[in-house]
Length: 361
Picture 1 (cartoon, rainbow, N blue to C red):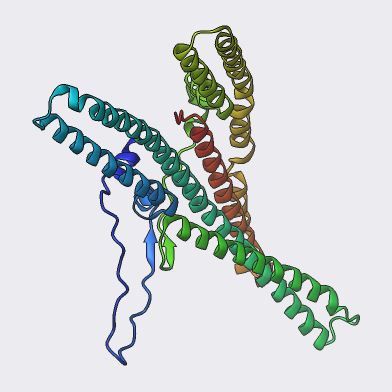
Picture 2: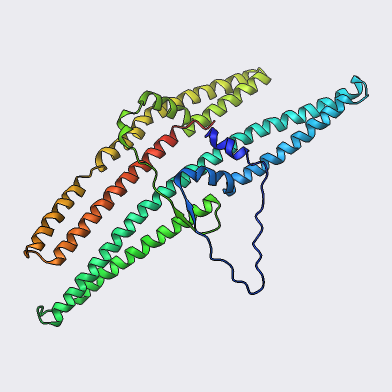
């Protein structure tokens, strides 16, 4: 995410937006709904995400401190004092400058990680919103169908086509579908609100178009390169590598038996972690591959389209009822929705897989 980091670091000033002021008695304008596009998530995170801005503020504060020390050091070297007189304060300034410079480098890594992580989570939530929308629409269709069935039952009961009255069973079905719609609507609203908060947007948002979903390359991935990337990026490997580097630095500072032993143990742990990560990789890729093989199929949609076409012709000829055609239309809509959910689920799994391959050192 080097491009993201460059974008973030380009924000050299953080401006607090002032609240709009309206004349007395003048109505405030309606709240604007912001459209969030998938391709602009990184920009929103860079400009508005609270976690990223917090790290960025600390980064700028250290940067200003370092600039002040560099200026003082430069002024000291230009002073008319002798080398003997400026040697000690100059060394003190140089040490302080090095500490701040190291801190800035570490903070740059933190900024990188914060941005990458927040962007990834936002993308997952963006895609989840579309999945929830599909699920909600399917649940609403099921609820509408249950209400139609209940109305039809009551009409038949009213005109005497049915002698036994058991409306409770229909009411339970309608209630169950109503609860499902409420649950999914709340999940959708909560997910959209959380996404808005993550992006740092304080006004209502709506999502733009879906990104182009390309899944055909899953089977053609360079598994050797993916394995190498996964082995380096695994969190346990990075932790063991950091411990090994620290032990090596300690040995460089003080060569003794204890530090040699600590370095050797850390190195062994690091190598073991890489071996374990390599063993784990086939499962990670296998999960993605299995999801792709098991779920992506448009055959159900094609079958539903054929059924609807056949029933429509039978309805035109007077052989089936309108309710039968309506049920077939719902079946087709549900099949399309399920297919879209499956594509989105696999695409989400692919993004997670690719995210797991990133070396965030």
